[in-house]
Length: 245
Ligand code: NDP
Image (tube, rainbow, N blue to C red; front, side):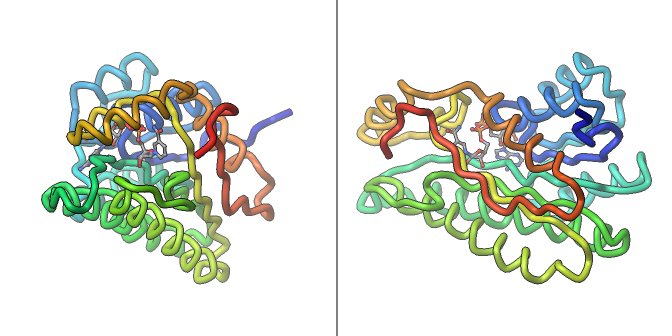
């Protein structure tokens, strides 16, 4: 069976660790042409070297800066003549109870998890409309479906990702563009390192005892991307088998 991934031009934000890195590995293995973005350029360069991607395949990108996200996507188009897929994956989860007033962390989550995704959409959409093809994959979370104490702002950002993705889905029909929301449960990555509240960190530690490897996400990406062009996988929600929340 051919997966139809070979030679697809794929941009991934947040590719320097965790889910983005795992997706890059599996897509490279399947012959995709990758352009990877994140702030930690050293990590991206090491990954690109390991995957034999070439120097043009990485762009230092802070997704909160619109011009930088545009530069990332434009690099893909300059290098390969098109962009087939963007995976808006960069995100962080410094969860805490609202009463603790970690307002700076709320701002960062809104900037990265929501505005970063919107900037990815803004950068890719004009190219995909012109091509009359494309696939926008936005990373939400189980927290995009459920809210728990300590997770209000993170959940709000991930609900927002689902809402904007559903609106996008309906709007891009005339342009033959596919949209997928992927909502993982607990996956072992660096995400929990962003939690600064000790109470939430302890609860998180328990949830993440069941965490599954990041290639679970990569396989979900490959599943969505490898469908025939007239099949649009709009939502994937997956958890560790042992996860209740
Ligand atoms: P990691 O912390 O391992 O990776 C996060 C990635 O996002 C890093 O590559 C980081 O790169 C990047 N990133 C963070 N801030 C920015 C920024 N301002 N600009 C560009 N890139 C940024 O966590 P995950 O891999 O787990 O997270 C990926 C996505 O998956 C997130 O959206 C997260 O919310 C979501 N998710 C994860 C789950 C999990 O259990 N792991 C569950 C549900 C959803 P750098 O620091 O180099 O910029």
